[in-house]
Length: 245
Length: 77
Figure 1 (cartoon, rainbow over the protein chains, first blue to last red):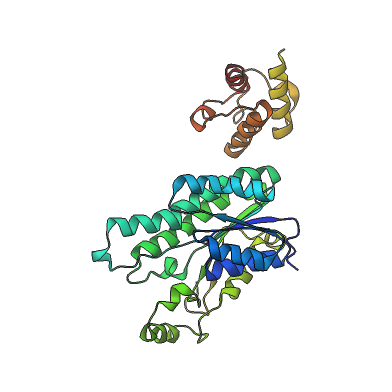
Figure 2: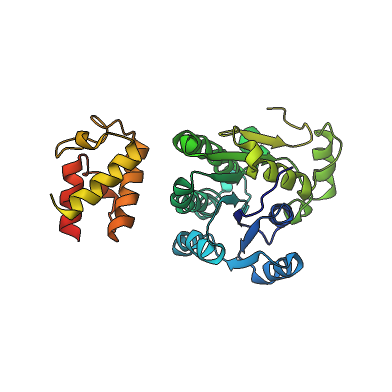
């Protein structure tokens, strides 16, 4: 099941926990992968671990020109981009009343605007191929909100609205656009939480534990697969029941 | 009939699945040939590839009819 042999996938934020797991999972299903991220060393490490069919394409997503060039580089490296996973994201948390213009702008730029640019960049090839999968990694906080994350929640909710609009436009061309909204997942991003914050969060999760990066990767693999061809404009919530949407 | 006209007509016929004689000078892609807005984007992409030219978005918006397309491509080539 879920055979991606011959498909080429571009994964952003592949140096992080969730992005790395997604790349491994798509690669394990037979896809060729292009690993993008800001830090080259972990990307190289992952590419070496994967072996064949793995390309490293470092990119700073706050650099508009670099972002626009990335889909072309990926297509040159792999021959095509059939699957795009927009996973890269940053946080600049602050109370709303203290949030600076810069904190707001940085998070919107990397988490939302770069996603727009990358989607736009891969569409031409997907339209011609009459096949494509775009998976945007949103977040549960895009649906529920979260104190201190006005910028992040806005960007993640924005991804959902953008995905749905694009899904409408390209559905007739065999291209699906979906979002995944992870809840609290064990990664470097959630490691920053202190024990009090963690236990408070766990109290709100019916499953009684944080999720794993592999559980997000499994969702991404499904949405990238030929079998998910009739699923588009959807948001798949993977959150242990903490928000049943 | 020019070579450019023939090549443009071939693309339109193939892409929109219309009869060749419907593709006249003033035929509008959307109103007469049944294209939706995404079809027009794809037609422009196909023209760009066939003729090795770049059609910027603002110019693409002015290409509404078969005649518009032929004229634009003749000027650009």
